[in-house]
Length: 230
Image 1: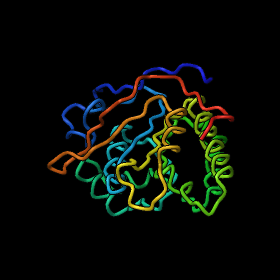
Image 2 (image 1 turned 60 degrees about the vertical axis):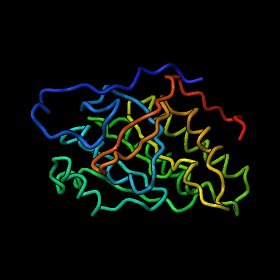
Image 3 (image 1 turned 90 degrees about the vertical axis):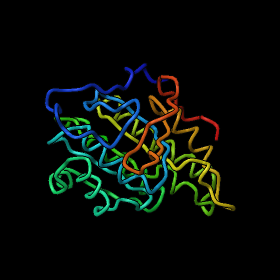
Image 4 (image 1 turned 180 degrees about the horizontal axis):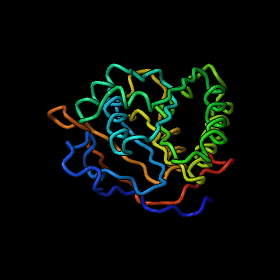
């Protein structure tokens, strides 16, 4: 079992006094991460752009964000619009976002493993965001044991980054969004929950102007093991 990690929190800072309210609300409505932390986040795919823009605001100017896009959902136009609506300069924010896309489970594993030596010693530490963590692993044409193996390898690399002091956010589409005939996401959600500090749900506010973090799980140390059951 991995060692216990501090409670991920946010706190206000002088650099943000008088600034417009951030996009993300709820338990993280005040900017300024107390880090490192690893959050597993369930949200709809259409909310990935506002989530990224809100995270960009929370980490502050000059901080780099590395986005591993496993579902081909990073949209620079929507991201720029949400950045502008949250009081940021879209060009400045986009210049600090680096996107790598994976189209197979093997590419996803390789990408996660490459992040460790690339980012573990960066100063300041970047924020790593994985979009659609489970997406590639739903492909039932690939044997289940192979998908399980590569998912654990991917999670192990992310946990290694977390142990090196890098903060991460890994998103997953909720099971409630599953369409008839689509593979279940529950097994991958359970494995993700074993790797993160906290598993949370994000919902769009009724007026559509922001996102709210809800349903925070109890704080626990990551416990993903190589022999975890599916």
